[in-house]
Amino acid sequence: MKKHAKLYITIAVILLLAVGIYALFRGDTKRMNAAAGSGNPAMEFDNIDLKEDKDGKPVWRFKAKHVTMSQDKNIIEMTGVDGSFMKDDNEIDLTADTGKIDRKAQTVYVEGNVKGKSKDGLVLYAKNLTYDGKTQILSTDQFFTAEKDNRVLTGDSFTGDRALQQLTAKGHAKLADKEDAK
Image 1 (cartoon, rainbow, N blue to C red):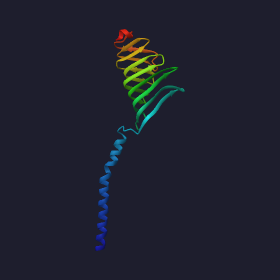
Image 2 (image 1 turned 180 degrees about the vertical axis):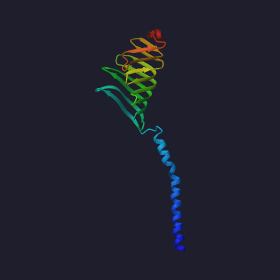
Image 3 (image 1 turned 45 degrees about the vertical axis):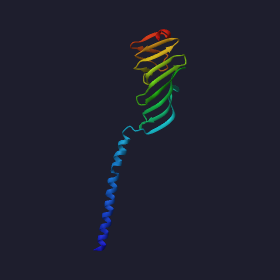
Image 4 (image 1 turned 120 degrees about the vertical axis):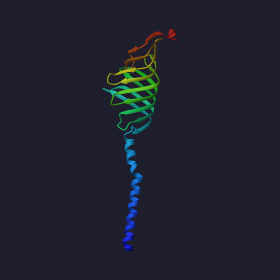
């Protein structure tokens, strides 16, 4: 009987250990699965260059101080944004606090102290900019200021081509000489 008692005790101890280990780790799978679907970044980078080309020609390029990429690699969030939008031989260089690239929707969004300057002397100040890759339109839905050739254009929003060679101001739009705009 003593022989069987030791066997039963050993089996009971092993079962208790197995139940204890299971109870200890059973929630980890749920937490890992929840984290995987919660939009947590799959990858993070510092000082990275991003770009998009179409038909062998550059459309935009960005350098960001910090980038997080979603697990499906469709959403890229940037901080410390420095970049350009290009069209033919024209280009507008810009800086912004943050940005977001949505590859699936083909959009680029930058916001926070957006400043831009083109090769032909246009200087842009805006709170945000959105580039729609499907329509190839660069726009803002908030107040902006665009200066060029001692003229200042302001408005509540604008749309234009991606290098801002053509710009259409909307909502309280005003064009004035730089001296009169102050």
